[in-house]
Image 1: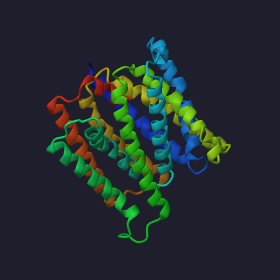
Image 2: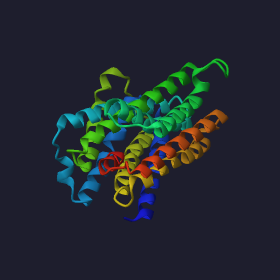
Image 3: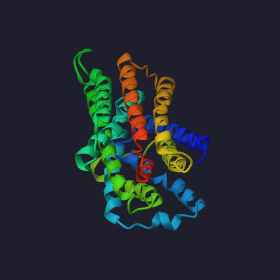
Length: 305
């Protein structure tokens, strides 16, 4: 174990994911979400392939025991990515980031509903508080309390929440996959299946030939997204998942900075208040799971995917 290296890799992955989201947002005015998912997934593959070769695990990355498990992981994951990218084009970057924090909270709910996981009062209370924080962030976008809401912002908030729900379902599915599939195979085939799934949207959405600048943004989003995935997967070799998980919330800081500097997005008080509640709830759940020793090895692997 090397906690400092683990933390450095975790923060690198967080920064890369936020930069990737910003690049997708910058290109969203030109290209539909399905096309953005295609570029993001396709250009992540070379990075992941080089990583697998460097680790001498290329054969392990290609080998699968449950092909349909990977198909479902790819289809649901691509759908979650599609909704998240759609939301980035409609909402400020920090707000889309905060609503995405609903995913680990919903994972607790879905694990209790569909996997029979025991959720006691403390975790249930933290999840409830976190979801209240998400509602606070979404409230100005979906209600009339602050005047007539923009229909596109309403749609963006609901789409972002839908993406968080699907992301939670994916994580629950991955928890089962790691029982029989290697981490490297899940990482590789996720990008491969997302590329294929995104390509299937071509007949149903208006794909375009992007401008040179948008094309650069999209290609960079794939390369940086692939690097983020590699850093995220690698960090768990050097530190426990429960120790590294709170650093996910550093993405809020980077999203606020990038949103303000590059997109002129000024955070609202509702967004900041809701974000603090969601982050506090998420950290409380992580602390509780660490205290109870619930971060088993298969969860550690699943969290890395």
